[in-house]
Image (cartoon, helix red, strand yellow):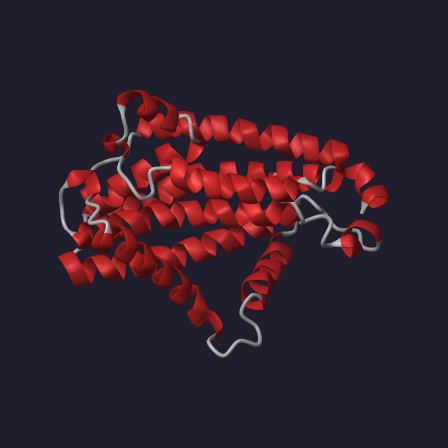
Length: 261
């Protein structure tokens, strides 16, 4: 896979640029929408939970604390949700790549993940601007956020390869992923701290692959603490194993794509 990525690196770059710019092509706001959309959701969620329901992070702190913690969690979740929602139709929506063009189809999820990471980076820039305006200089540990994202990338890639392959065979899987995304939005500590959940439920929440990454992301950005490097190493190894198994399955099923698309 690394050899394929290196050999087609210019193709991946061009298709990622096309995928990112194509989303906003023809709109008056253009790329500004990539900043406006996360800010709009942040404002809505902060008003609903932070002001109306008066939620506080860990039952303490201010509305500003809650807004930044919420936004940090949404950055990770939105990247996951984007890959989850798009992956099921990656192959079926590109029949020309399957039937008429000699194209390494395993690159399609890579392009989706790269686009999701670009949106995540835009969200992180907005988060830093918000932190500077509300609290001043960011914590020094915040420079470690790329390490957290790097450990998360194999999960996104594995998800893309797995769902894009299964989406060709089982078309109903697209309906299931929509329900799964809504479920994980509330079963991941996005709107609440994991400490606010009962002890038994905390253990169940930690089985969610998003929980650990979200917690580590907030740890380095907001709390100014070092991440759990041992935990991240284990997470990265398991995520890479998941990605490898998904890629093997994708390549096993690839010969059947042309007949099913």
